[in-house]
Image (tube, rainbow, N blue to C red; front, side, top):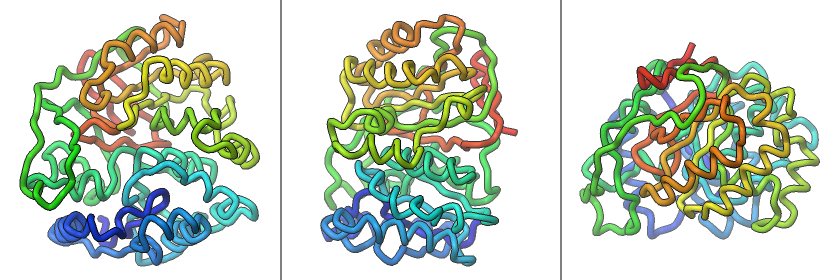
Length: 343
């Protein structure tokens, strides 16, 4: 059972800004009501400007959280878009591998944290994908979304996730995070469950992947010109042999990438040979169901292998509510029974 959770800002430092003080207070109180002791890493609350300018301090925070025996769970404050800049400070002298050796801690985050998941994967750490402090625990509505809460509480109580089933509903994405929205719940809609686009009803493998926008940036320097080079230098993207038999998770960000960009991202993965060796693909629900049908068409056309299972509309990623998905443990997917179970 998790007793102490430490919150880290590995991408953006927005958690330390005054305009989010109401969310910080709300989220902290909610965690404490769950019986958790809440810590913030040394630099987590230093604000946007400091966090942006000091990737080395962000890296130190991650290492310190793993090395601190009192910390049971490392929870990312939010995503962002430049956590790749931690690479030299975590890998130049195997700093991360040394810090995590022999440690058994929960690491939870999503979005740009995809890059951190790949970092920790390369260091041999099993992680959890799907929720963050600001997006989920600090939800401005009357409470944490019930589906989201169910998975978070299971993780802190058992240290794992047994199975994932579809949410009955999905919510509109928030656009206003001001104090005026405290207690205001998002509009909800009926959810149709997991949708098998092609392939076998059942498949299995260890899951790895994350936000398709972040994966795109590993290969494409449009956002940060130096990112592809740094990722290649430190071997961030797993080798093809590491993808063999795995299930690829993909979910799209709040930027709602156009179908054209979505296709480009898939082509990078296809050209890397990923779709030739994996056992299946899991795809998160697009936020606000934007490009819902277009993404389906792009997936089928671009992957170009009708035998590869693609399970769509999973409640993970940027569309709320959020489940939590374990990386690095065997998953059994059953599209007919609408369940993903973990061994």
